[in-house]
Length: 379
Ligand SMILES: [Zn+2]
Picture (cartoon, rainbow, N blue to C red):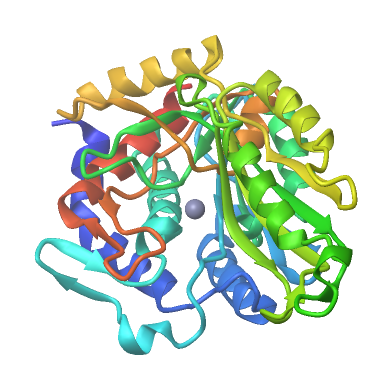
């Protein structure tokens, strides 16, 4: 049997115990103290064999970067393990969704997205050290505190570390119960479209009014028409609001629109369309603000090369590793957009990210940990 896999299997209980500890240290994005506690916990786990640095995240928790001491004399270039310490689950979620092991799975808030991925990476490092496998690169792990809300405060740090790295391994969950890697992600953007009209009494003075609600309804038809499924481009007016009372012609209305693109150049075309929206009723005005938040992670030659290495290494573990594309974004979008070879989805195999059935498969803990170790040691 593969030595890394045998080692990971022998550590299955310890890995599970670490996942439990990480899950039970709740860390919602909007509670900076809680995220800091989580960061301290991870730092305490690696302090014996890593240099640890943190950066303030403004209104968020601290961002963490660890550089590991690994076997092998000469280091050339770097590998970045990339993850996030925040979750979407508020403090107290454990009361209704406690960590538990049942039906061949581990359950709990953040277990899939992405506390298991963090545990796998730490045990991958442990595997390389214990088996004394020479590692060619300097290996770092960065955990951002604000990934679930768009990574505004960590993006520059991520990009700085990615620029000097040969490869980025993102610890987000794999796709589906097969745990496919993610070799392409759509780019994500948000637009706010605000319509201003003219208020009037709907009974006394109807003709003097210009309804922002009616205007917005027409604009939404137009905006929804920007979707082009063939190009993987979607535009979703997900929230609308406007008006004050039924007997008032509405003075203002707005919609919040999510957009996703496969190709970066589609985002520019879409931006022009949003910024040049014209009112149907000339008495109204339409303003669109916003834009691309995460560029798409495109399936470049570097991404494909990295995936092929991962697939070959997985074969040694008896796993037929597949790839997938997803509409969701991660911090891997930023690193891939810089042209740095990035593969994503190396974390837990399970389902229910951000949902009540969040869980990972117990029998995929060892091979994912071993794959991470082999990747870190092999690229
Ligand atoms: Zn995530």
